[in-house]
Length: 92
Image (cartoon, rainbow, N blue to C red):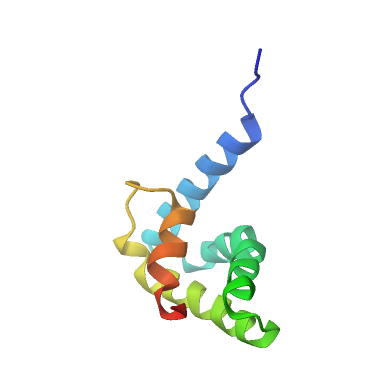
């Protein structure tokens, strides 16, 4: 028997709550999104770009674009999928 991963579900609920806070004007809440996704976004950028400096710059750009476009986000996909797809388009 498999026990559902409650912490993963809680993380999804927390991200949803944080996104809603940012969408309603609490820009400071976006720091929590950065904290949650900083490492995986950096690793993704490093994999694509092969340079530490370029990966750091690209990661920063992704988070800036994410904040600028967060009001366009809706839960038709996960927030992480949206962040990777819509905010990293300049990497290609």
